[in-house]
Image (tube, rainbow, N blue to C red):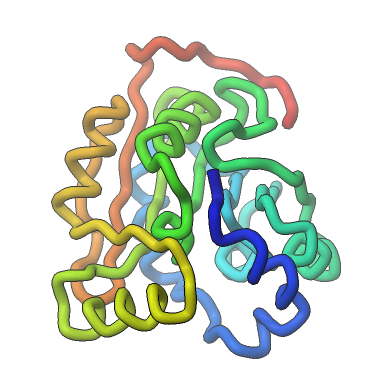
Length: 200
């Protein structure tokens, strides 16, 4: 599913030195859409845990397909699970929030990724996606650079991602627009997944 895993696995040791800190303010705004207390967060494709480390929540878990990135997350004291975003090794209805930050464009079969996020969320939980808009000038440049270096990236405009999230049984809204944008989608208690208190 995550076709760009190899480079991230090899260069996990350098990731935090090269990337700026996550913008916690937009992530917190996304969490504000949740209809339940956010105590357990799953950072999907979270690598070193750069995004979830910026948030003050009791339980933070990083799922990534690149073991080299997860080694860095563990050094920061985070719980980690090796796994594919399209087949999460996480119990149904077991987390309050799912983060996908600067990573969705690296994941194949995005609709399967969104369906898995929906499955693992408890009713009233929230999926917060932080991505880059390929319709902006900087976005077009980013698309060109990522394809030039060999990434198989697929980028979505904010409204396109919102529609895909709605199809996956979320109630989504755009929290922030621009080159970097944020969409938050809330689950309801009427979907096919029930409440669970099981652990990952």
